[in-house]
Image (cartoon, rainbow, N blue to C red):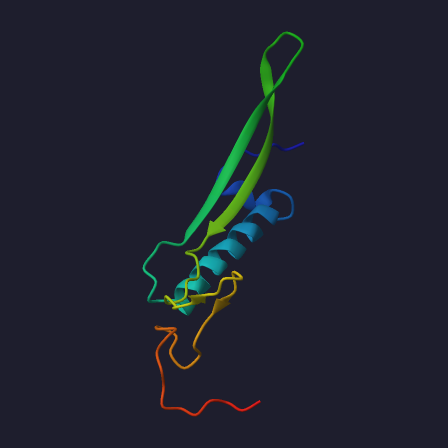
Length: 114
């Protein structure tokens, strides 16, 4: 049995490359978001967290650890511009589709007939 030292180089040998594939998928997700929203200057983050839990032997020494690797990406929230909504006594929110910035703004457009 050949043992490997865990390193960034050897991660690809772990579990049929699942760790490296997950890392590649999250890097792709973050980079595609940069491409889709170049005007949003907030950072996209990809993190890999490796947790190690000692396994104690009967003599209370440790020569094994249980480990789990978590890879995640964080993207800036998608935000709209600010809209103006009117508030009814019933709690309903209403808006003017012809003037999204000012709910009470009148227009010269004819009202739709129903």
